Figure (cartoon, rainbow, N blue to C red):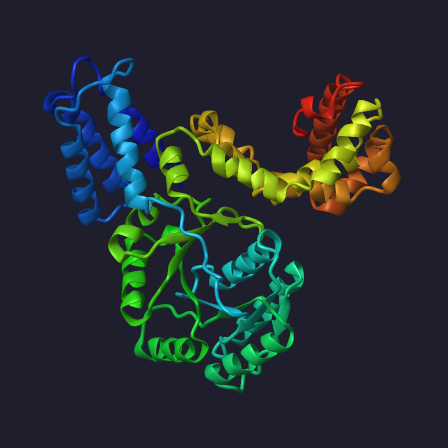
Length: 442
């Protein structure tokens, strides 16, 4: 989402040169480039004007500290104002109430609301160790109820089966009673989305809010929908006391303007972002980390949190000890590594948080997309247990069968086998070494 604006910010900040103090003359070009970058990213005009004025005011006449140059000083000024624009401090979800804590999720149709409800449930279940129940109040679209049920089956939360003939307020009342009976910590309510805001929609959501009295009312915003989404969120906030924003599809080709505008325009903090299509692609929003990524410095804090929260440490240690003993690296091991990567949102998500990754050409990043991992896993799943354990058995006829079984080409199978061979050779070098010194296992 932030690749384009990040590149422009990095280029603009390189324009600050010279020594002494930052003057109006030597920041004029940089300020102009930053303004263009923000407008190109579809940041709200009022937000751009305010941001530029604050940066200019902070910059003019600022003395250069010992050991620093004007570029470093100016970058810090821009960074601090970006953090302020994004919300200053990370805002965590509030569950401090008598169980069940009720979370109501609203949003327009197509924003990814129902999928986000499931992602939020998985996040709270695994990270916060909460007992979760989901319920859909979308009686106008029965498929939405089934969609939430299917997603719920993947995450293993409790599910209140909605009767489409009931009014949403009755569904909420019954779901709350059921959540209490099951001693649930959290009840998440999925509400009906609409193509646009209308009075019937707002009336229904306000009734649901009144009956449920949620501790959190979260609004889902599609990052790819531009500034319209920001003003829709503002309209909702005029009708409902929203407590937080969830940005979806941040891994897409959005220009980033929504993330940079929504807090300033609505006054509502961004609490979560969806980082990939995978149901695990969901994390707390960190303004400091996001500002750092925009300026090309990566987001190491979020990266470390992501790895520590999603990696199966027991499985990783088991593999590491295996290679320490000199045992061969087979396709089961490769598949496990791919699955671990998927849990962390895919390789592209990890690369985007690294300073070096921010500078990689888009063509290189595109080779690391999640779909490539999925293809690899599908190919391995089409193999027999013996083939996974002994990849050398896979010759011409077996390659054809595996390719057909996984819906891929023989060259895809060859590419996977070559990748496995390269990794196998590398793993042999770690025989007898401490697991903490092995790549991916540290």
